[in-house]
Image (tube, rainbow, N blue to C red; front, side, top):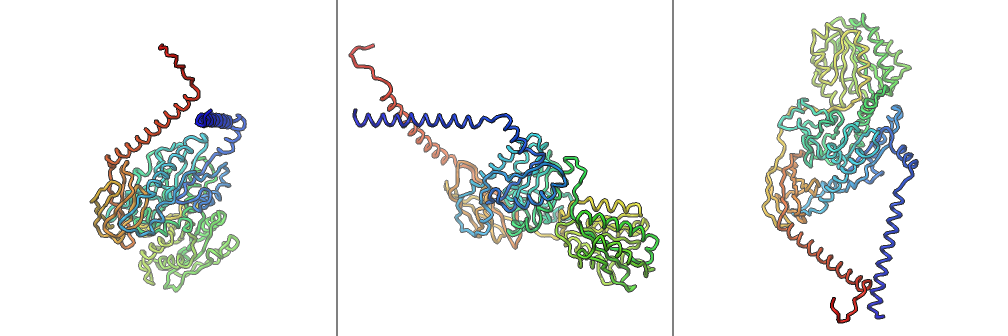
Length: 601
């Protein structure tokens, strides 16, 4: 037998062995996929609790190791035992490629490589598919809560239209680069007046937040998810506000925003499951009592309700402070009976009884000055629901004896987080002095009248779970920086885009991936995939303010796509030719030749 023939036979034997091995592996895989019914039911019972809580991490986060996942999980897990539900947490299995955030620190030249832009888009789409699969196709009797940060927030907001709303209790997004808040548009946006706020706006203090750095998904809240979506955006976060701070984008843990969100989520869970043990947030409640002589007829009722409010606050894990005040000209300075560190249920009633009704005899009193003193002196906890409860039968001096104004009180209240003022007074004062209600409402609080409403006050305060302002109002006018951009040279794989406008720096974004920051007046993008349309966005930055991005669509190049297709076809032809050669070799070995007998058939 010739060496050539032996080589062919060995090659065929190798081929047949490979087929046998693959057939054996296939059978093993098929057998492994068959589970005994009892084992399958047990697995399902273990992995399908009443509630599944999913977190979608941001760019570069490692699954099961990401700090944002751990903080989101910790904040919610602390509140779950009292709800009495079975639950588990899932860190969504998707790439979360580390593209984009780090590039905001990189000032690049005029020539920028497309590089990882396509990988970022693939990562987001993979997350959308996996989230939809888990929510829609697993655990049919479980309810879901989903939360996501940065790239993970993009995954959620893009996936929402494809999720089954009946299975989702709540979706929370943090630092979403695709946020959409229509009330943030304009020179003086509606949000800056506190008007027309989106119902999913939970904490977005920047009233000019409009669209995210990477654009926006519209509608951001699908109709079937009304009341099931909330978004958090740090005030200066470059990805979701009108400002330019990377530090704020990576501070959702240190700023306790996951803790804040966990209270909202706990509230939604209790409502969805019809639970009686409604969750309330921790409270910091300061009680400020008018101790002038005119309060004598009602002081006992006021003290009783102050005692009930203090008791319920302490029992819920909150803190209480107690002050009293009169007119500064009595003379009488506001007195701190106890603060958040020194007040306890054991000493509060005794300190309350020490307040002596005296002085006064004239109206109004020095409420504005006392309110500022209380808010300044106390150490309020970030993330707690903050209340200043005022018990009085008199209006306030405006400005006060020490020149304190209503604006001073309101500004300080909002700056702290805010501190909501609740004023308890009688019907006559409330009717004759409407400014009492104006003061309370300007801080996010309200006025309660007559003794019969005192019980309502305690119930109202204790049932509140929100603690951060939806927005900070700002009536100043300023125009965001803008750009005009156009394609000036299209050389297949490299495209030049020129821009004009008032910008110190320009963020270059390709297909939702941040490529870097430039300041040259033009951008050259190389290594483009011309088989698809590419979306280039240039975002202007000026004096710490981010403008709206200018979009340029780089259309796919038909000529290059044709050439690419031709290359693929040539490779395919080579494969077919190689396959034909292999078949000929097999025929040489296994198909016997018809002897040449010279006879034609």
